[in-house]
Image (cartoon, rainbow, N blue to C red):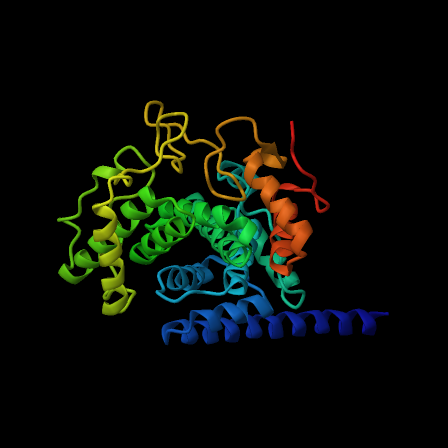
Length: 356
């Protein structure tokens, strides 16, 4: 018996040491990949082997997330979904239940690779006591952005969800302190133009052109923020080194903006809702209160919506469109979004339409 116990203890110690070496090697590999401009490859490593929730690893997680969000490339659904999963894992294993509740429960997901679960659980107990709540808020925001970006890609190929796709592009403008601003405004403008929302398309594409000039000048000082006063769209955003489109593509946008500016039917104003406020703004200007964010479109839930666990909700119109597209198309990406929402807020996996 003593020999068996000794052997078992040695085996556990050996496995722990091997696991620690594996974690260290994987982190070194991800640092190298991210440092050489390969954040997707680094994310792939974390997706396959897991993301241990140790504070010393937070910088590489942040680096991977920021590199992907600030890229001028169009990322695929799988990339955003993997980033969403990674950030949820880190936050759910690192921060206390009280901290998670305070930031809106976006981090309840758990998706760590089985090869590293035991190591992660051992370290999480030690890291919870010294975890910084501001990091929890930051990482939860990253997972929220990744969720909306993934859903944006999933709705892109669904004709019945073209307005939901446009709303997601517009909603992501509130996160341009993290996302690349010129690309976000371009995408929002094009999406609005595609669904006939010419007023907002004009505002967003004109803002894109202004940001291109700011990038070339290296300063935001000449940027006019009048249209976005009283909204949750940030004024101060990071400026990349170069613009995200070719000169030819920018000229096409300039021509469209110029043509629309001479159309009497188009007004260079943002659409407003029943509050008399920019339609996508979560911020109530008078009370400075934030309205709930629809988990399908990112738009504010103004009236009674579809309620899920932990205070999450969706606008009925967007939820019904999502459910209809899911039932009709049986699309794998939409199914994956529903799976995520099921773990996030207990959204039903056999969803029904909301009428009441």
